[in-house]
Image (cartoon, rainbow, N blue to C red; front, side, top):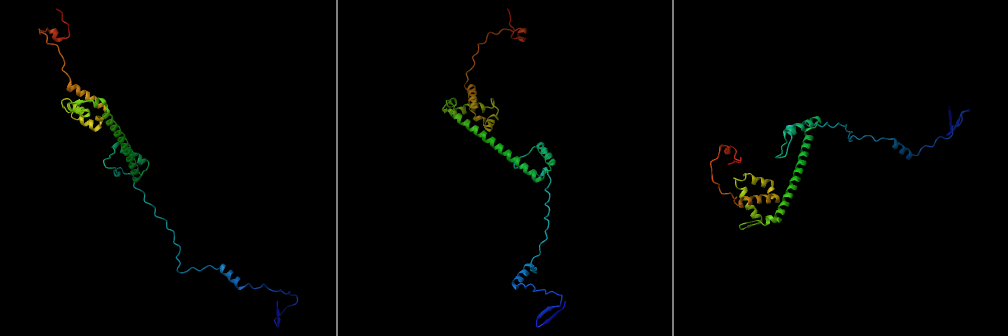
Length: 228
């Protein structure tokens, strides 16, 4: 296609159609906005590069169960048979040393709680006995010289349980340790026994009969009735 110009006037060669007016150029503001939308900011030299992810180190396996490393509270020991059975269970279950120690600590804690509960209940029972003894009529009416009530009972019983010929020396200690000596029934019983032993009367007997020679049969069979 050839174009001829003459005073800025355009015409086309015969047979060529006039293309008509072209598209209007876009405004400078719209062009700049479109350019900014497609531009990507260049990375700054001072920007940190993304760090590579590093896998965390694998935790060390806990130590295996070792019976000799178990710790128990002061004064607490586990019998060898029970400890052996626990060790068998721990090994079959694959328990680690920390897990086994936690179970031992739990056992000790539960055992102590049970023991404390039993002792508290026993002390409560014994304290109730002391209250009953103070209100007991038989014990309160006891008299020994200038002593009255429980003091008279203690003095009377003491004559028997402190006499090594009548009572084992460890008997009083057992009464105190077990607190059975606070039991009203035990106190009344000991008091009655002591009174019978220390205040009893003599036994009457028949006057001796005339002695006569005994036969051999009478010596061998003293209960055999003899005939004249």
